[in-house]
Length: 415
View 1 (cartoon, rainbow, N blue to C red):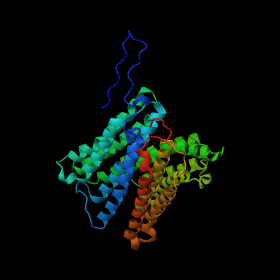
View 2: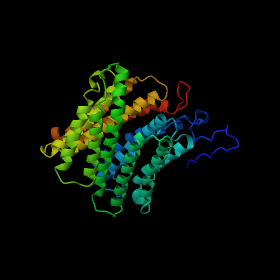
View 3: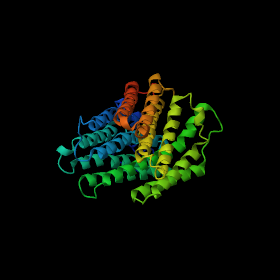
View 4: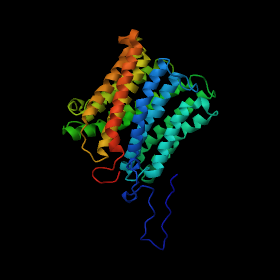
């Protein structure tokens, strides 16, 4: 736990109050991996991603079985969202909020403690059946509140009201996770876990829509020099508000076709706002096109969901995996690759192996989304191909970037 600094005595006005832990570069942690949130959490997320999908395929093939704390599908959804995806979000936000506020969030031992809490949750979810009742829930649920506190302190201290929405989204993710565990413990209606996981995916989509509007046009304009690349403020607001409405609609389990209609409208808005983001100018720059491809997957997933009520061949699984395997997979890999380069003092040029990794995760998403329609007779084979491509892409990140994540910045700066 971090301790608030004491106020400097009045008789010594020239002395400043002690800074928050890690607030200045003079208090650099000994381990480079604990110098910024992205370092430890990106490494953990990639490692978990490499392991969790093959384990899920083994479960589908009957080779392994998860804890009976949750049914297999709910366990898979939970770990992909509250395990892998939340780790990436944590790494990104712990780093970004420090930049936004010019105050550190967590570094050093407190950061490693938070990472340990995330690891504890993953272990608890695997061993849930062997643990006393409620222990797995307590272990898994502890992480997000601590992350929220770590992010809230600099945001509140600097009155960065614009970014408070991030705290609200993380709180929504925590509430969804609570619902999953209440279902697992038999305290709410059966099936709540699956709906809560779907709502959690909505929250992640909301995070993507917020962050994408703020940084994708800026990234693309800065890298390509095309002055016409811009954001449209009204469309940005309408898209985010529409996605927030979809979160509410899904949370209250509104009757069909309301969720589909709302999803379709948000999908159209997501496409409209991105028209001037310059995706066509990004094709020669892997660190850019993977971000635009991931955003396109999100828009496609929303549109597929919107059309699903009117075209039964477009299944809910297709829409869900366009958003998860497609958007979340591409964007987490792309942002981890970009942030890790920039914040270790390296040029924003994708290493050759990552170009193949971006292609692999994109092709894997295509296989996962289209398999139910194109190859229903070879469904499991398609899933294995998609899972193998996913794991290869994440393994490439782990191999290429681990040396960067555990070493000091090459420019000698803190972080």
